[in-house]
Length: 350
Ligand code: MRU
Image 1: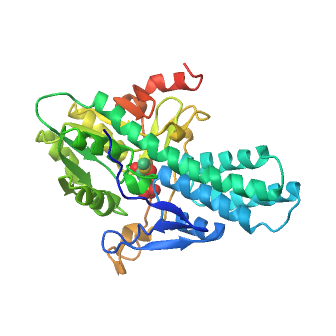
Image 2: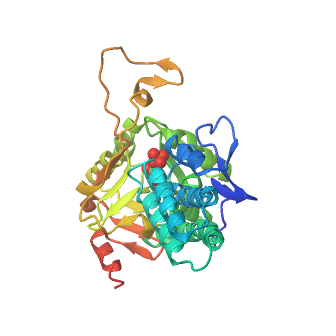
Image 3: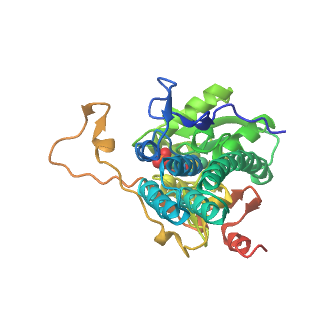
């Protein structure tokens, strides 16, 4: 059965959240203590914590910290100040829907909790811990569901992934990397190819770090090598995560995912998206409505403190793209792996 990974990017310790500082990996494993909602907002924005489900967990703790900072004891005033905390956290990153999902869940808990403000504060911390525990279980279930749709055969598989949808991007274990971990534990995986994932290199830095940590054989390739690898028959399937999935199954994920899906289709390599149901935004009819974050151009023109590009050039740095549903063989969720067009049935509980 599934063994949990021992990498936890967000934990609650005593009276504060403790984050693995993902900007420092793999060179240094360090943690950052977060004891205010503002510090949590900055940590999300600066990507000390990143990855859609991990951002959701972090935001939930940000709400619990914010509730502790509100000094008034009148319920109505408390709830209105809590809304301001929510607004601050919402402004951090626009694409990953888990951020908004977790904040809305916390606001609903606050409104529903009877009693004094102290009871609401306690309920919010308890629910943040529940969100974290649920996400860990969800990822392990996604891993098992992935085994039902990966190609079958006598030989162990070689899978390609993009960005980092691993333990670091979730409460633990991972979504796409959860499927990969489950395949490894089931003896069905030979090797992972990790796209380096320009511009921030989450694949080369974080996915590769997790694989090495777990003893999973990993080959890092530059993003522009994926087509060549598929043409050579090196890749049996692609598994990626998602930041937001629209009701029609269009999936936003790290920039470069769409190109990868097109390449996979051209080579008849199955392309899977692994994500919890909390990543599905049923309010959006299609991926065209998903807001795409644009980040600092320095992520493109600079490596460390060294500028690579000439002055005078312009830059465009979208952090995500949308893969149309028709390129996705199945969306692997904790409840099952389904073709994208079947996702909508879960909205009405069918
Ligand atoms: O900008 P990031 O590093 O937060 O982007 C992360 C991704 O795109 C992941 O693939 C996605 O969030 C899925 S994480 C389980």
